[in-house]
Image (cartoon, rainbow, N blue to C red; front, side, top):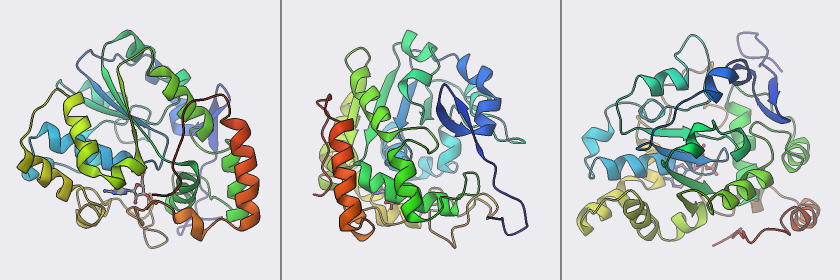
Length: 295
Ligand code: A3P
């Protein structure tokens, strides 16, 4: 598989058995030494679980619903991505260190790889989880177009790799279970993509309260509108339209793709669904965490 200009996509590296972009692995020392602050807010997700969506919601709440303030820069620069380390850009850690507090930060790391200073701090964490089947479908399409990750292979191959945790950021199953457990020890608001789809205002209010804000109903309604999939898809500060094709080739698949619950039904065969469900039962049997695959 070759890039349009003939360069091969970089293979993933590994930290403690978890696959990660090799640029991240090469910067691991700086990432692990990152100093979190008590007034940081960390947004944490497994990839393709609604990170961008919750980022925009958090920013809208922080800016009291001021749309213009949320247009101050593209979303991936408003909230430093802690493990991002692609030269020649400044790393996520460098960006965070240069940012005045209170900071909002982003990570996809599983609990065991999070820089330890986060656990030592009293920072708030918002985790968004999305059902595994839709997450797999979304990740597959993302890997087709994202030139910073390996080619996903065929859907059949990807299906196996996802179930075996052989994707960047490791196993979905371990990630969600790890963060679900972590909320017993740390201040974590645990949200679900499916709940956000079902009743955005209810979930946005939860985020507002968790952030210690009190916005009136009209502003909440405005945030619901501005953070709808349709609105965000058209927003150049969000839809990655400014990202060069050599990083994201959106002619293959758009970054803001479908934004629905249940798209897996258009991808899973009956046999795959059965295989997935049997495996899922085993991997998820010891957790109280449950997901809705449709709403
Ligand atoms: P699909 O590929 O299923 O469309 P992340 O931001 O973590 O990379 O997640 C991307 C997924 O969230 C994509 O899913 C994207 O369309 C969806 N998404 C982004 N903004 C959304 C919104 N406002 N409402 C619903 N889904 C959204």
